[in-house]
Length: 339
Image (tube, rainbow, N blue to C red; front, side, top):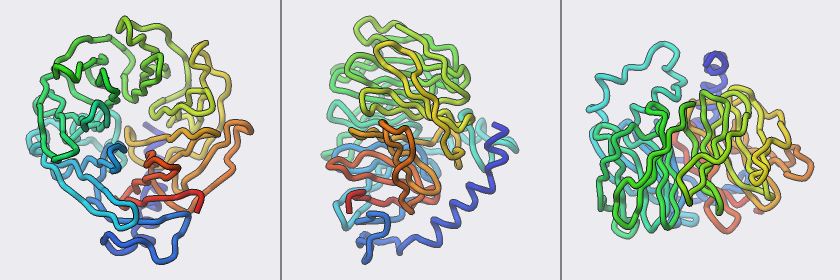
């Protein structure tokens, strides 16, 4: 937390840069692409968690209790889906001096919606006023189910047969069966589970307070291994046969052998620059994209940053080699890094 207090000035700089470089809030593509930007649009100025899927970027607008869908290939458009009333959480969610303005893992419990994932033909997000997970049909942009889970949602990940939900407050990871919309497993993870990533053979959870990665076997819903990493692990990605996790308070990237469940490298990165609990990595065949004041690509072979694009924000996989980038002030850019 102390690191983020020191970095408030950096976050403010990011906001000013984003504001100064943002085109008008329209769906038009940038006339002269910068950093591979082929389209840009403004979403609400307090963007929360986000996920990519169904040809769109889905962004939590926790100020208004909505999920905002950004769609398009160059001319971007917005669709707003009402999830709940954020005012229902406000009495118990006044941030302390440290939480505001940088936020914290703890204050993320007050986001409504909280956490976003795409999978099993649906979009999933947390509604913490009801301790529930909401299911949305991307074909109609309508809520099709509200699933009681009994926890405060932090992170979500989804595949065809499971939705995994972390609770940083309740120290548990739950599994939802999307065929029945019911909770079918609860896995205790006592070290502040936050980020969650599904791989072909395991579910990985970043334990933000325990400096651990927890490996869960989806066949048994039991913990298989714990991997010590560094301070405040959160976003994860698969790339070049490895699992990568960003340790936000340590300003490092841990490279993990997922089969052996051990760290094979610790790579120094630029300091994490903005709100705790809101970050992302995108894995590519040869490395990982990282958020920052400039979008950076770390090559898995050299374990060094080999590309730096003048676009601020968090990256999400848009498919076809493209990236969505969500800026601190709500600027959404669609990038083609090859352009």
